[in-house]
Amino acid sequence: MTRQPLKALPDLPPPQTIERAGVRIVYYEAGATGAAAPTLVFAHGFPDMAFGWRRQLAALAAQGFHVIALDMRGYGQSDCPPAVEAYDLDALCGDLAAVLDAKGIARAIFVGHDWGGIVVWAMPLRHPDRVAGVDAGNTPITKRAPAE
Image 1 (tube, rainbow, N blue to C red):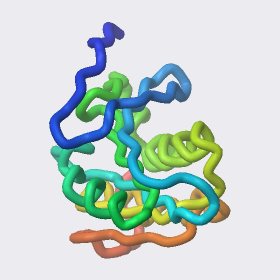
Image 2: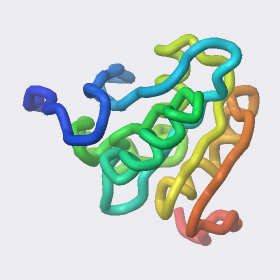
Image 3: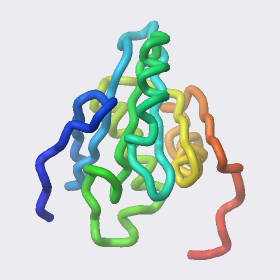
């Protein structure tokens, strides 16, 4: 997989990366850090990328929150693995947890929109010890679809 150099995006902090199972995940981080600063992790919808959260990141960082927004795998500057299985909820939730691991953060509030909402709803089921809260916009919690 050929990777392009990372590009700075307007109104976002500089891109940072983690690598998880050979997949580069790009994220943007702003605001206070430390035990007193709650962390919010933002997951975008389809077809979007972290850039869609730029206004929320700036406003919440200014209010003292620690904020992180990912380009979810397959979007923006993150890698696009070719296998369909690379995009299941275990992989996507694992990416969110891996960013917390890389930053030394125990728990966060996960905020999602659209497809990102489905992903953050799955976080308490897959990584309950990492979740301080969930806020999913435009995405109700539902039972799993009747498909393999």
